[in-house]
Image (cartoon, rainbow, N blue to C red; front, side, top):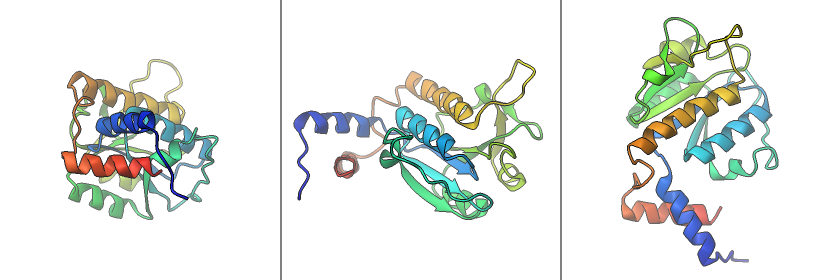
Length: 196
């Protein structure tokens, strides 16, 4: 049975497709709790991020429920990797700068990053954070400034803060007003979303 899309839905999907930020990417490394992954997918969808890389080599790959992700899971394209090296190599080939979130070493302040550049943000495990390799091979490491005794946030909360800082910077530059895709590619992407 062929799915028929209404004009109203098509118009909504066209608007969403136009605002997708293909130059902003997220990498999740060994995040354990599927509820955290679901919450992060919802944030990605809300911030207009179309793609997420999932690196799982220590934790079991999470089972994401449609209910817990509020259906955001279906709107995000996922790439699975077994190594950071393979993931980073692919992102660098596409021209992404890689910024990894960590408290280790000498990370820069999140608010000093230019998140309007073509960049991938790396988030790590709830307990261990990012792996040493993920930090060492990143182009830059950064941290969310903290002003209390506790020096960490839930990973889904951290992802929301970071991605919406990127969204704020991009909105200020008008990056949600004009598609990063050519008109033909935008039509293809709109058709792709319409079939989801």
